[in-house]
Length: 86
Image (cartoon, rainbow, N blue to C red; front, side, top):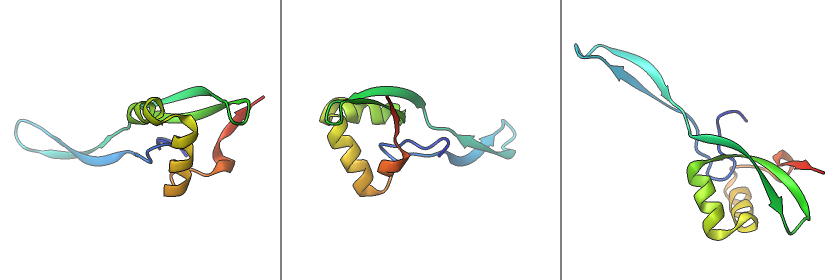
């Protein structure tokens, strides 16, 4: 699951570099991803998620548990894909 946000499901997009002479070459628009540790209160453990900046704002707004449940319901990640630390 590289370069995919586990909360929002955002992934790299493909587009063009356009030069001054309008010559086009392929490029990728990567997601602003972070590997973050979160304390999951409901399970009393630490988890590691690959989260985009938009995913961090969603977690801050609705909470970690609600964001994880929403991501699993939409199919962005599975419970088995979430890495648990101790």
